[in-house]
Amino acid sequence: MAVQWYLPHESDSFTVSSPVQSIAAIDITYTAVATSDIISNNTGNPDNTTSSVLAYNFYRIQKIGDDYFASTGDHVDPELIREVSESFADLYKVGYQKSYNAYSRRDSGLHFTLEITLLNGRTVRAESESSYYCFIPWNVSYEGSNYVQYNGMIPSTLFKILTTLDRDQWAPYQKVATWGCYPARVPVSTQEKGISLDFPSANTPPPAEELLGKTHLQWLLTLPEIPVCTPVYYNQKVFLPFADRIECIDAQSRAQLYTIPFEVVQQPYLPVQDQKIAVSDNTLYVGAPDSHIYSIDTDTGDIRWAYKIPPVTDYIPVTLVDDKVIALTGGIVCLEKEHGDVLWEIASDTWNETVYNDTILFAYLQDLSQPHYIVLDIATVEPLWGRPLHTVQHPFYSQGTLYFFNEEGTLTKVALEQMAETDLFQPSQPVESMSILGDRIVLVLKDESGIQSVLMVHTDGVRTWEHTLERNDYPISRMILSEQRVFLIREAGIIQALDVETGEELWIREVRGTTVTSFHEYKENICVSADDGYIYCLSAETGFITWYFMAQNELEIFPDKISLSVTSSEGYLLVVTPSGVLYLLSLS
Image 1 (cartoon, rainbow, N blue to C red):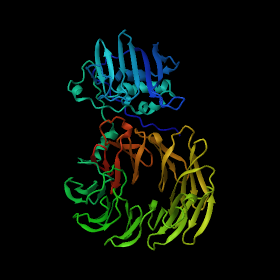
Image 2: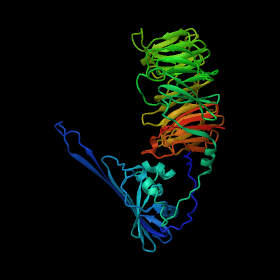
Image 3: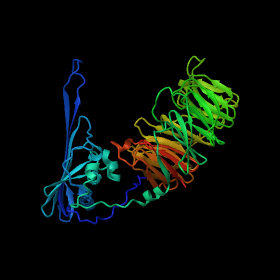
Image 4: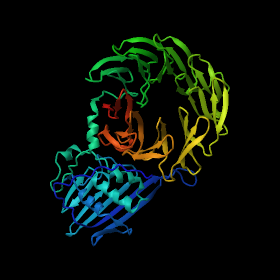
């Protein structure tokens, strides 16, 4: 099934007539010169010479009769020509600009030019020498005056044409051609001059999905600094983990309820998107960067107990299992929830830890001649199984059974109670990842030519279905197994759903961002964040985008680098942006 593009809504017609009408011809010229230092000459000694690479592309589109044809021999849809004329909107009458806010990419010189000839003989010239995203700003010359555009409408239409005429050459801009450019913020000095009345204003109404997304916003709050791991929502409170403290705010009023200060933090560190603190039964459990594990009353902020751990410089992951607190300290420590008493501890030398509801799977070195994988019973602290690390690939524990691929590449299961080991089958391609839910095992395979496939296997080794991607499909970066569907997160912002019983493709959807960065299921919807700063809510059944919300509302130097910190709890999403804004979104 082909990708079902989720196209932006058509914009309304402009209320002000554009001088760019009745186009007779369009000449598109692109040149770029990139220089790079030569590291050494043939003798191996440094050489300061440089090499230059010249890129040149030219396309001409001309009206012949009632149709348009390109110099490539392709017919050009008249609708694209209409979009070109309508893209000349929101122009500011200012001087020529080569860059956006003085940003320029090192070792690059480029020039994009559109020379548009109208049927009345007049010409309009649009050009850019900017290496900023979408080559913003664009300079427009018409009737002796110069204008500048920041909204990205000209390059949005330009790349629609270029990817149609020369898809291989302009493939990196397919995303822009589909969705359009993100608008850049107009500099204050330019904005004060106001939009020129010589050209129309693009008064495009927001899509219904965007308007609906705004109704899910409960509130926003500008934080004094960015949390160092994901915040947590619990019982109408939001807990914000900062480097030297945890702050608790009321989820309705946003008022600060209390602060839990930590002792001196050993060194600063960068924020991460992982959830590391746990909460249950009106108690917050925190492995703080001041080298203590705390039990904190969520109502009052009072510390119920504290346990000193070896020095750390970051929050450490804390997991709750029944009446126990499991903390990953570089080793593993297990505490009793109510009083903080130590039940057992592995002092150091553990990694790759995964905590399940009754066991912990981890890699271990201490007292062993070589690293081993160990499955440890949480209640009895008894090692249930062990194997040298190099003999185990993709280990996964489920319901008393360990599954892994052995040295020969055979999928093996071990019933830990009986210690009965069974070889299930050997796939014909290397395995990239594995997930297990109930009696289903899903594998992502990749053959020698790079083609990926998804294989469903029963826990008794019977293969039930296989779904193979096409050669040119974007690769799978993550796979999520649920009760009814297998979700494939693929590069280029693509989400694909397969039927868990048959492997049949149910739907495939693309979001505007180039990478899906988080995935959350809630009832019959899935919510994902992408590296464009947006939150998207999709129907799990159909894949249709029901609403979306723009969390990072200011274009950065590269919009595909925006990283949102997102966590879900009790029907809410907490979103922290790189600029330090906290959003609370309702999923209902």
